[in-house]
Image 1 (cartoon, rainbow, N blue to C red):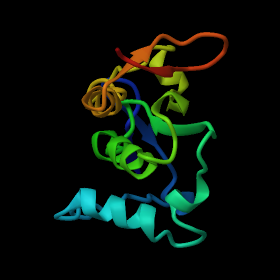
Image 2 (cartoon, rainbow, N blue to C red):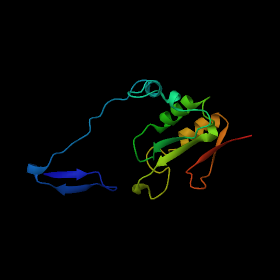
Image 3 (cartoon, rainbow, N blue to C red):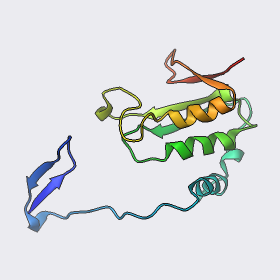
Image 4 (tube, rainbow, N blue to C red):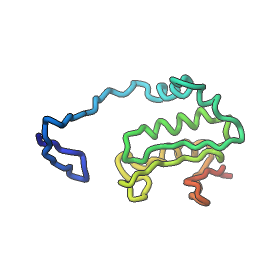
Length: 147
């Protein structure tokens, strides 16, 4: 059996023995009508454990991990939702956004479909008077309040 793998820019055709091959394809489901509301509900009523607001304490550092632009993650909804839940508990300068890049990104953040993965978080932070500061001392990013 001939299978086309999603590999590189054009794909890769391979011949496999059907007697020992099982092809697993994803099931595509429509997105929720109110995606922001679903995210907010998940943060406030998780499947297991306490809500996010109950897990964080003033004075603590919080890291938000997001996939890079090569992964289908709703960063433009997720990061602002998490920041909204942290609002009033953790200072903005104590929040670090980590972008998980794979070897496919060649160490460049913000490449791929959907554009810059930081864009949603930066926009939300700018609306709150925060600007992004370059990484330093081993930290991937830091935020500082603008005057």
